[in-house]
Amino acid sequence: MKKKLLFLGPPGAGKGTQANLFCKKYGLIHLSTGDLLRDEVSSGSVLGIKAAEIMNKGELVSDELVLSIVEGRLVNINEGWLLDGFPRNVNQANSLKNLLEKINQPLEGVILIKVADDYLIKRLVERGRQDDNEQVITNRLKIYREKTSPLIDLYKKQGILEEIEGNADIDVVFSCIEKSLG
Ligand code: AP5
Image (cartoon, helix red, strand yellow):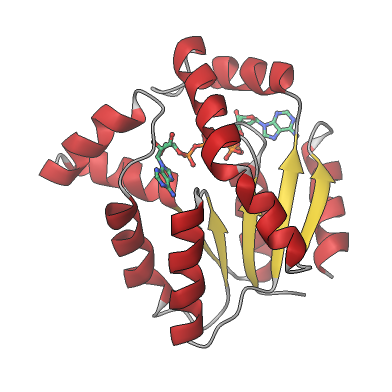
């Protein structure tokens, strides 16, 4: 099983859900920049207060902040890792590439979880996180299309991207991911 992974997909696709299951089963470290940023927000730090304003609008927080969060953690992992929600734009993808070259841990697989917008909006509105209201979700989807979706071609060209249909039961999606990475 591949052990240096990235899950890509629009908000609500199920990246976090699937990453949790996968990391538990295969003993990988789950690095979700969304979760790490929400921890920072809960801590009430100055950085967290700044990040919360941006997250509540559905915009991307600065590349510098996200990179510093990821870099500090990735260098100390030996058992394998799964990136969820990072990278989110071409600049972050280039920084990740440089970092992985430096630590000699090439990315082995990228899973793109695909779900149609209507289902995504329904799932997120039902979940009801702070940034899960319709206006903010619409902006998150717009940012995904503009800034994150170019990464699909980038990883396709590298021959490491597998597309998974995410509009199915959680365990069905999980099996498809396992098959792709096995
Ligand atoms: P982040 O936390 O990464 O949010 P997101 O990408 O919008 O992803 P979600 O957590 O909403 O969706 P998901 O795909 O993980 O789905 P999930 O499994 O949770 O980022 C939040 C914010 O932080 C960003 O907007 C930005 O401001 C900032 N940020 C984060 N990373 C950044 C970065 N790298 N650079 C800059 N800024 C960054 O599932 C969603 C719901 O659907 C759940 O209720 C779940 O139970 C349900 N569900 C899951 N799978 C299924 C299924 N198969 N069937 C039915 N329901 C399902």
